[in-house]
Image 1 (cartoon, one colour):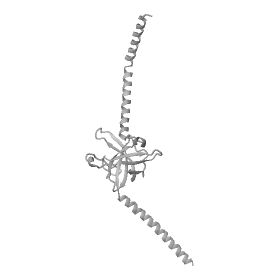
Image 2 (cartoon, rainbow, N blue to C red):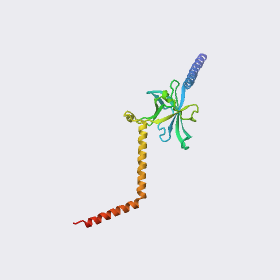
Image 3 (cartoon, rainbow, N blue to C red):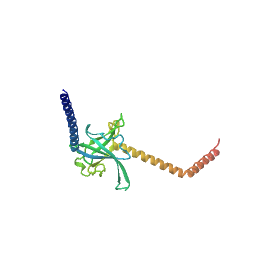
Image 4 (cartoon, one colour):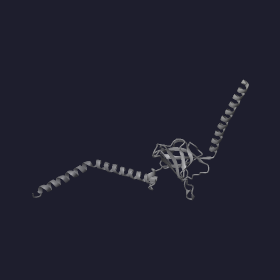
Length: 218
C-alpha cells in the first residue's frame, strides 16, 4: 500500500516536472524564434526634444497596428559634420517584424498619450519609395552597430494633427517665436545703449513744446 502511494507520488512529481520543463523549453524556443524573425532599427531623437514617455517595451505602431517594440534606450554622442560641435541624441533600439521594412526617409514619430505619461513610436510612412534614393541613414548607434538609424520626430498632439498641423509647422512656429524674441532682445539692447541720446532728444522736444506754448497767445 505504501509502495503504491509512493509510486503514485513519484509518477505525479515526474509528470509535473516534465510539464514545467516543456513549458520552459517552449518559452525559450518561441522567444528565440521571435528574435530570429525581427529586424532591428534605431530611432534617434535630438536631445532638444528628447523621448519623453518612451520605455523599454513601448509599442512600435504602423498603420494603427503594432509591428514591434522598444528594446533598449540610451544616449548617443557624435560630432556634427558641419559645425564640428558635439551633438547629443536619445537612441531607441526597436525590433520590428521581419516582413516590415523601413527606408531611410521613413517618417517616425514619438506620440505621447493625452491620458498618461507613456508614449509609443508611430511610423506614419515606412519610406523606401522611388524618391528615397538620395536619402541616407543617420550613422550608427552603440545600441546595435548593425542596425540602421532613423530620424525620430516629435508628433503634434492629436487634435492639431487632425487639423492638418504637422511637426514641421510646429517647428517653424517655434523658430519664428525664437527669431521674434531675438529681435526684441536686440531692440532692447539698442535702446539701452542709446538711452542717454534718447533722453536728450525727449528733453529737447519737451523744451521746444514748452517754448511754443509760451509764445502762443492765450
